Length: 312
Ligand code: RRO
Image (cartoon, rainbow, N blue to C red; front, side):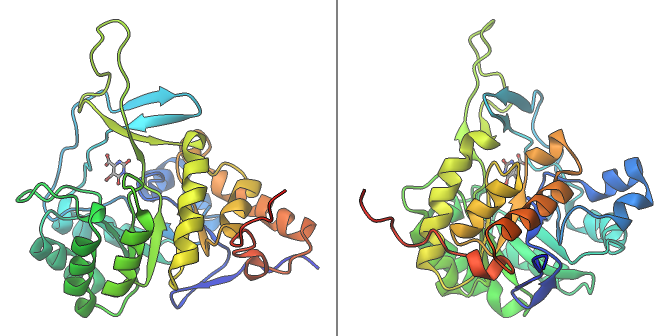
């Protein structure tokens, strides 16, 4: 009997556990490039949008990408149409996707965050929101997601605005991601997703100056997978809400490792730039891996790696 990959996530029923990482798959551009076949065979069980902000942003100065060993460093800088542009121009197109839509949002003050969450969550096309809390506050310079108390306070401000699932995207650039995840849960988050990129820099060997226009960026790809697995496993063991695990997933075996570490969903990021159909391949490989493990579905192997191994 082939495994049943369906999974329930914060009350959303999904065909399988593989979604995209925010910013790593542009469904509107992909539809332009691949036509309706993209919609008919959508690579992910849910679509997570690129992060939107209250006002439009042009993004960082180029170069924005650097190829690193087993990964890449990006400093894209959140280019987006802003809330009004997203609602007017992107959302109607995303509403036609055959899978639930999760909109990623970010702002630099609690009030602005609330305005975006309120406006986005009212739209019927939107199944849930991901809160990207890795951005510095313009007033205090604080990065909300680096501080458990700030994260809990943000959630307490946003939680009353909507009953739709709020997923907090955690930064890995902290000493104790479990403390931030626990604060998000205490503030009323429905789920956490991790990891975002690891702070990174590349130096141009010719000029001995930073390669990226913004001077620094975030490392993603297989280079960060072991770090991501450790953080997912620690966080999943500590919280009672579902975890979306990501960081360098390129195969069904990688995806299965994140599920064994405790993830309910897995997200494909950098691999989709190399292969836009990676989501489908990884879902198929995951199905095969469950079959080989003799598991009827994701629930049977979730958290299999939660317990510490016996000393050998
Ligand atoms: O746009 C970006 O530069 C960016 C974002 Br918002 C993010 O959350 N993570 C990342 O690596 N890049």
